Amino acid sequence: MNDFKERIAAELTAVRGRSLAYTEAEDDLLVRQHSPLMSPLVWDLAHVGNYEELWVLREAGGITPLRPEIDDLYDAFKHPRKNRPSLPILGPVEARRYIEGVRGRVLDVLDRLDPESSDPLHRDAFVFGLVIQHEHQHDETMLATWQLSGAAGLVRDGELPPGKPGGPEEVFVPAGPFTMGTSTLPWAYDNERPAHRVDLPAYWIDRLPVGNRAYADFVEDGGYDDPRWWSPEGWAWRRETGAFAPQFWTRDGDTWWRTRFGRREPVPMDEPVQHVCWHEADAYARWAGKRLPTEAEWEKACGWDPEAERARKYPWGDADPDPGLANLGHRAARPAPLGAYPAGASFYGAEQMIGDVWEWTSSGFQPYPGFRSFPYREYSEVFFGGDYRMLRGGSWAADPAAVRTTFRNWDHPIRRQIFTGFRCARSVSAERSELR
Ligand SMILES: [Fe+2]
Image (cartoon, rainbow, N blue to C red; front, top):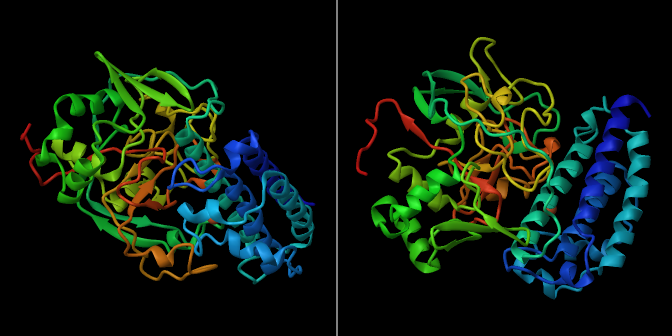
């Protein structure tokens, strides 16, 4: 195998090691449903193997189905998450055996692959990028399931750089066009394509994600009890759920505590806030006299280099992420302190845009002009126009293989089990509201 294929094989091994580590647990923890929002962990495990079988073995490799009778059980579109525990899914032992059987044949397909082929699944090994990113995305979902389960075990105490207090609150992005999306990154999904020009008026965007200290100020200022800050849908959500702070927070006297993978600890006030839904982010922004950035504003602030007239793959440039630039890949099971990555700043000076927490934007999910569904409609197209809000930048739980400036993620505005925070923006033309 050449270097390119060796790298792919290494990525396949790494992601599988991750999935197996997240399913190394008592069978009961793996087969139980911890929340109606999530699948049993063992469903995710066999599903990533089944997806790999469908796309690499059958579609790209032309290999006869190994277990066609289970396809239906692992079709995410046929069975919503809440119904998955009642399906006759494979148990942990059988699931591990199945995915191992698939993987054995996948390496043969890799060996035979022609990355210069005109077949778009083969070209640049796209189909491998597809399954590697897909499995990492499920691994992140599995982490959210663990967090909801309250089970101990996945805290990792990897070293993160110290935070750096001070510095400007916002950075300025001058008016002008930029290139949004990509037509060239080989493993980009269909929804990131094609590259197109977007012209934006000038705006300010927070240099850093909103931190726990600032968010606690909003809570302590009565933010959850004041309908002025909430959209009508947000206020309805707030009343229905009785939410009073980010998910997993509790209050004891004057101290905020959080539970993180079964561990109870004081909320670190210098970390980006996480586990807030879109409605909470939107309400905070209004309270702060600001608003959420649009997806285009987020992407321009993250990746555009106006001097080079080109978009960077990451805020700092095109070099692969490393531990000095961004908090990715579950090195520690938490966001890094604010200001921890000055070297990872974007051209405009925005920091921590990649890693730490997914960031809510104000935008819904729409195709870019010239969108073409590939390789299947159910990846993106069927979600366009739903009630989703776009999330950008990836979290501490996202792998570098599944994160870049152009990467688009989406979820319902009420979801907060995901590793999600936000930063605010404001238009230059609008006077900053002094309502508070
Ligand atoms: Fe999936």
